[in-house]
Amino acid sequence: MINKWKGAIVVFLIILTGLILSPTKYMKNIRNSFWVMAKPVGLGFRHSVGQAFPFVRQILQIGYVVRQNSNLISENLGLQSQVAKMTEVQYENEILKKELGFLKNTNSTKIVPAAIIGQSSGYLRSVVIDKGKKNGLTNGDAVISQGVLVGTVSDARDNNSEVTLVTDFNSLIPVVLQDSRGTGLLRGGLQGMMVDEVPLNISIKKGENVVTSGLGGQIPAGILVGKTTEIISKEGEIFQKVAVSSPVDFSRLEVLFVTKNE
Image (cartoon, rainbow, N blue to C red; front, side, top):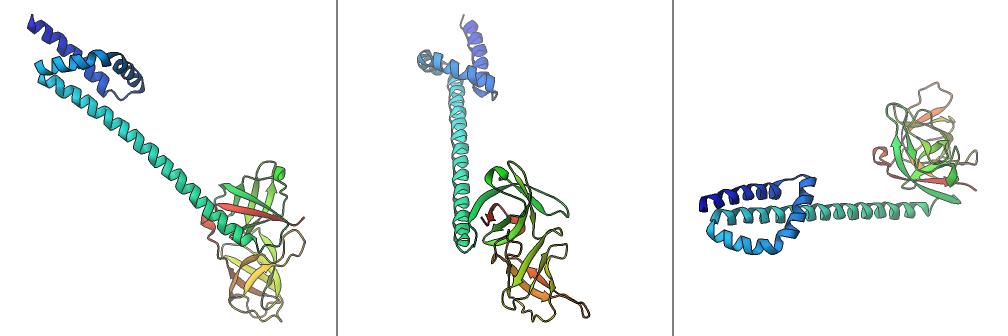
């Protein structure tokens, strides 16, 4: 008789162990229901059976440890997710604070913040932002980051826009060398940015600021583009060329601002 009950108990314990250790979602729901229904009976059963069969007590303890460990893992993952979100929000707030400080010196009457939602690959250097015609954007609007010109809107669509960066060879921006007062056109390309068509009578200084000239009226005047690094024009050319370096890391652009003259 005892052996008969032992066999039944062993079968029951095998089924119970499967419920405890099964990782599937379906079995998890069954397991949760089982624990709710079996809790009143289980307390007495665990005490009496645990005394008769010591290994039963060990299995029940293992099940308890497994459940506790699973709960702790879930709580830990939830906390990690919250910390990651808070860190990201704090980082975005720091970026916005810096941008707002730079924007105080921008001579524009309307500023539209935008996030980058896509970017090109290869030689075409452009990004896609999450603002478009519905936000008042038009082709040719200036786009800045950290108070520095990084591109212009080249294709304004209803809900998003493509921005051609100043490092792209299709970019052409009227600029002025701030100290020497020489005017020219800022071009992008594989060799980097340069200002072309600077008159020969201009004495270019290394390290002087290059800013937008405002010619054409759409891009506000006085937006910083970068600094001159070296004269790259050759003897006999009718205009001077000077290389320009931007303080912006174009590989880390995240938040952009579209500036408009209205």
